[in-house]
Amino acid sequence: MKTEVPYKIYLDESEIPTQWYNVRADMKNKPAPLLNPATLQPLTMDDLRPIFCEELNKQELDNDTPYFDIPEEIQKFYRMYRPSPLVRAYFLEKALGTPAKIFYKFEGNNTSGSHKLNSAIAQAYYAKQQGLKGVTTETGAGQWGTALSMACAYFGLDCQVYMVKCSYEQKPFRREVMRTYGARITPSPSMTTQVGRKILSEHPDTTGSLGCAISEAVESALSQEGYRYVLGSVLNQVLLHQTIIGLETKRALDKYGIKPDIIIGCAGGGSNLGGLISPFVGEMLRGENEYKIIAVEPASCPSFTRGKFAYDFCDTGMICPLAKMYTLGSQFIPSANHAGGLRFHGMSTILSQLYHDGLFEARSVEQTSIFEAATQFARVEGILPAPESSHAIRVAIDEALKCKETGEEKTIVFGLTGTGYFDLYAYEAFNNHTMSDIIPSDDTIAQALAKLPKVD
Image (cartoon, rainbow, N blue to C red):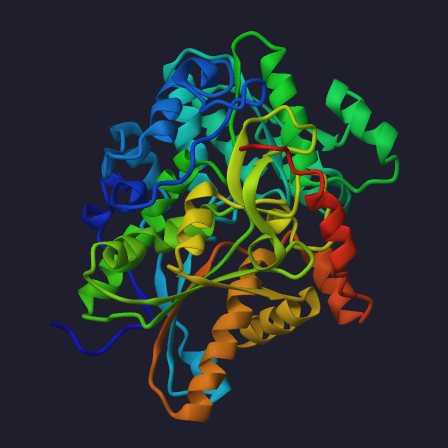
């Protein structure tokens, strides 16, 4: 076995996983079921059929199958940009003067610039297999919308994207990439849907949220024959597809006999975090290993650290199924911070249950702090990170500095979910010292939580 660890650990093409891992199969306490908003009863296949693709519905509801085969056509597409590298951050270690060993799994080496393509291509594949005309979706920062537009172009599907209004305005070039791939982009909330008009009548100056955009995308899918809704995070099916990240990470570490002490991921809806940590959590659930896992979320939208574990609507318009999750309330609309991909009021039901059971911890950080970490990382590692990814960078640096104080040689692994080259307005605000931190008050959160649905 090799002892010297290279700067980048690449797996061979033959080592790319051919199955996704379903962590629910190893969970003693399964995630609570999604509820039908009309009956408050657990969703069935018949309930889901008008919303999602048939095969994705099966993946969504399956709590027992540990592995799902990745279809050959998806495997071929993965090989265009996978395996992604696991990078040893030697220069960051040197800059920090830490004895810690720092690794990051870099998911930005594709045109979408993020990990989102891992699930986008899978969902587009199943839509094409079902003979659909197209799909609708929402996007926050734009990574998911970009990934889905790429996947739909590949399979010849129509792609309609509702983009959170503040991101639509802050990131015009991300918008143009989606249009280049053939997607139709609508700033959300909009006047094109009934729920959008309702939200605007109640909050005319709103900058939007993922919850708003989800409502519009679902309504749009339900009103068009031959269309289904697809989602870039939160859902069980999405976390399943994203486990390609964690499975590759584990194989790369095993290749050099490395066992991580700390694993860190940013948390918005849960796709990246769940994808990265699931194989490691599986080992913990089976009693094979122990890890310290840290979820990092924005202080402006702190669902884990300040939310409530309860049933809530997944969307602001309250037309989607209810999920038992850590939530700030579906009526909570976060400030227009620059980490658009993390501006969701709730969290994956899988991750919520794991967090509730004490399998990992959560921290919230302010955006000025994460941009300080992003800038430090960019200057020594040569990659301009996305604001979302920089939440994980912030805590990875914090943990490495703790090792400097104690002299402990811990191994830290974090997920670098994507690049920040479409986030330059945010970097401009930081460099001009005009960026501020807007943290919701206890009263604001309490008001939103007071509107949680009454579920026994």
